[in-house]
Amino acid sequence: MFLFAFTDFVGRFHPLLVHLPIGILLFTILLQWLSTKEKWAALQSVIPLGYLLGAGCAIASCITGYLLGSAGEYDETVLNLHQWMGILTAFTSIAGYLFSQNNKNLKYIAWSLLALISITGHLGGTLTHGEGYLTKAFTSANADSLAIKKSLTNAQEALVYADVIEPILKEKCYSCHAASKQKGGLRLDNPDWVLKGGKNGAVLKPGNALGSELYHRILLDPIEEKHMPPKGKLQVTEKERILLEWWIAKGGDFKKQIKQLEQSPAIKQALASLEQEPIKLNSDLPKEEVAAAPIASLNLLQSKGVTILPVAKGSNYLTANFVNLTSLDATVFEALLALKEQLIWLKMPKMQMAGADWKRLSALINLRKLDLSYSNLDQESIPIVGALKQLVYLNLVGTKVNGTALMSLKDLPELRELFLSGTKIATADIETLKKILTKTTIDTGGYQVITLASDTTLIKKLTTVK
Image (cartoon, rainbow, N blue to C red):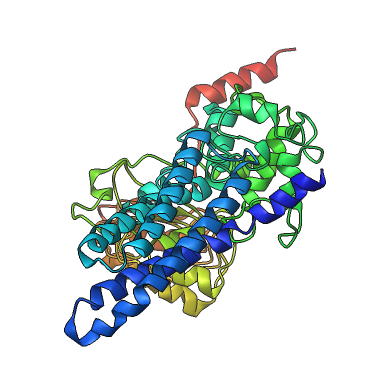
């Protein structure tokens, strides 16, 4: 037991040591290239020392890497290839030391080392961070952050695990608990693996959320070592937490539909926020291409519980749903404004903001659809909506706007749908709006059932029956 603990302790130095040979060897190769210039010829004398130090650190990295990998937490195929590439790097560094006086041979050694360091680093990144680690920087923001999010047109018909729970696990857990890495011997990328658990036993206890390690570790203080996901990684949002708790508490089933499980109001609201209403009109989608959204802004918004989705497959245009937030801090607001070119649909029901912040939303010039229902938007702030010239859909249900303020909407040439139920708009103002917004369908919510003459006659007959 002590020997295992000791080897594990030594192995944990690998992430620290592995960067030393990389830095030393790359710097040595740079000095080697400079030494070919007459001005820097004197550097030739330090090149043997550089290769010797690089080789020593590479050997230390190989030893600690072997001890770390022996814990069995990584994909064996990728791990073995990573180890052999590391060993080749160490031997090539030794060759660099031995042939450091022969510039002709040393040139090929330097090129070989550059290739080996790149391959070994890529494989190490794959083991630590998941498949395609080095190439993620060249993928679009949609592929990196949004592809794992499922878009549900009808949450109640969706599958609980495949459509709601699995996407959460994929985003927050797969980097440490999937095919390429199994920290603690645990894999979560397949229902069978989830049920099997890890080295310390089962992590899922159907019907008992607090007794399930899969859920319990999310609740731990982030500063604790056992908290999951680890500090520094994208954390589980409050909405995701309650959905995980609900799924486990209701049996942790992998095949049932959402409608088959009992749902509290909070769960219904969380599930509804996952729904993505299909785009109905071609005019909702801009014809122009747009660059991918800033990945940092997307990650920040998603970490705060904002649901962000592409409007269509392969599109950089986005929808953002703030159903889980009723106020915005400065960082969230700045992240939202960073999406001004990509965002065409914004849902902010029940949002509470100061007048100055409402005015800042006018920067979202590409918005086609805007839902501000039951927010604190009032007649002082409504002019910001009039600045969004591309709007085709506007929901102001339950707000405090009045008829006079709504006259600012007359300059929205594309507006087709306007929802005003529960506002402070008088009937006379509604009629005036209809004359101004001739192309807009205005829904005031004042629905009435037409009474037919036969209804009254039937009621009279029924009341005379004795």
